[in-house]
Length: 559
Image (cartoon, rainbow, N blue to C red):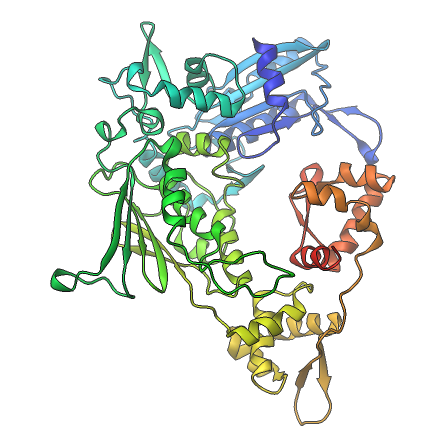
């Protein structure tokens, strides 16, 4: 059974809930050198405390990043240091489930931790939080906030004493196990992997999270756990004789299928918009699909379920879509950080979030809100509006384009260039002002200082789409429209097939495609990133290389 657990984990990729850790290092990129056991123990404490401070997770020790099993070649006294890492190097000590096994003659340790009700601190004073596949430092002055947030996350984890396993829908449980591709009894999956139930005197005890996800009658356990959808006529909500409700629906299902049911109903009311350009868009809707669905998923996953008197709400007006989630933002997640588009993540409901993530509804935790901003702006729409309305957190998506149709068509000439939204905004401004602008106009239109305006204008000059004009006093810049698509760099031609099948490539992928060393890959990739073709995320061996919008557009243009 333990070997089955390891094999199952090795089919997954590192991320929010999983990390592989080797005891070896490669000085200079070649050969293997065993690390000091004390350093490996520190890594164990860091990763598991970060996971426990977030949503829980699993650490596989003795595994390389490419999932090769290289084992734990330590004497018994050093292995004891590893086993005791979460007890000796953390305050308060963290209890981790440890499984030790032998795989192909190599010893492997599997550490599992659940979301902890209290934050855990490293012996050197640091607090870490797991965000995607990184263990990020958490500011000491925000620890009190983290502690309060931890306390509020206990609601979904409470055991409902009157509930029985028979209250769960067996069809939903079977579909859940099938989607996971896991042949084990579903009770074992819920207990072993997700902590959705426990056993007392041999009888299962269900958490509220388990009932919200899989109950035959979820309203028995929470009266307002669904979604209320209301479509209004016009742009304002009216009452009494002027009531302007066009459609009202209460979507009430277990969370396992709630979002799919909500998507199907709401999709019927999202209108198609004018197709701008066949080269770039197959179809466009008044709200980009990713944006409105991500807003609903976040609302369902992160709402405060202790507020039992109100549902998640989706209000649709002629000019906007409002998604309203009960509860204030949890602790470390602030409105200011979201508006800055920080990659920030903290789950009020870590048990629910882990299930929804493994089912594929949530991906790249901490990326949802920033990606919503990007998608809206890529579709020439205003960025999402975020706000707190009493005890409801609200995301508003507006369907009115920022630019008229002619300006949008004109801006498509520059889609293959690595421009940010401020640079695109000044291009739209220039089109209305004789295809020219000044540094002062850049500062005013984008609300930035002179230094940032200067740097970003210089970037546009380097790309060849802006040139200084010598004809007028002062610094005037003229827009130079591109005449033909730029060629795809020859280095990237070799990996186009890989990029068509997956969202990113790794150093290992590029080594195989280019037949060069890891160091040479890094040098080439760094140049491609500087030229605006690739975007780098992660550090060290976890670095991933994503195509930029410029490269994506070029791939479309070149077929």
